Image (cartoon, rainbow, N blue to C red; front, side):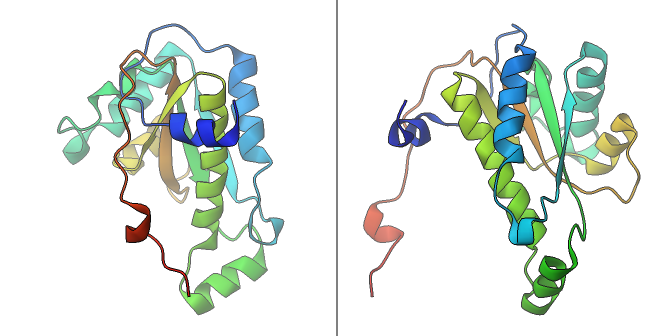
Length: 180
């Protein structure tokens, strides 16, 4: 599939078939993320891949616990894979200092780029993904046995889509750009 088709195909999937995702496909997605660019080559990411039923169910339950369980992300436990994306703080001094000066979280930008690479690779392979930013971070860290100081900015569901493809609704080009 060419790039234009790929970016038009990639969408948020909220209904998954129960079929497992082969390990080589998961690895292919992780490799796409690993090779993403980052500020000063800091690579401030770590991917916690939840595939076993026990861990996946515990993480899904943790994600939706407390005030986060009001129905928005009930589909999470259907996904055969959940990936917790950890943002590593101060992976390199230069982007961290530059971020302080400019009040920009470069490590978060880098994680977003890497995660987008992962989702695009998944789409190329026929897999579906959904970025999830609304989740109980403290409970997920506990379920994964992570330090309290760990930082999880995003969770990704991954699996075989089991829903209809919907047309993307986007603003018109003149609403999102201007030439000077």
